[in-house]
Image (cartoon, rainbow, N blue to C red; front, side):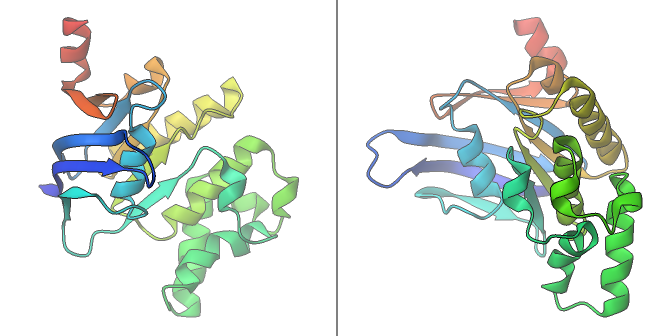
Length: 217
């Protein structure tokens, strides 16, 4: 089932004469695992922010399924940490959705368990390793129960062990039927996705399976 339709999307940053995105069109189906790849400046992060609702397109449209909630996790996890205690940080999003105390507690426990941080619930956030901090950023988003999870270079700052733990988690998250958009420079990470979008200077040059991409070279 289609949950997002991007049509002829274009975007330029204020006071820039160069388009960050140029006439891009594609769709996202429920359960998709899409890697978005391309060089620096190709428009990957811009696209992520538009899909997450941070930017509005100059032209074209992004049509989302009614009620669809998109959550984004960024490269710098500390930028997304808002509380000094792990449990409180994860609970922050649900609290802002005016949920009952019971619902908030349930979502917090579930999200921390999913990212293997339940045993650190009462820890101070500054005591966490970088990998744990990135997982905490994940838990804060997962507690919102997003239908579309957008990852913007989330492994770029991590050591190999933490990176492997994170991409393995993303694989399992998608296997449960959740939709994932993964912005990445890493070829190995990209090839874990079922589908790949290749951007170059704001243009969408390829949209297909990893098998097609490897065949075309």
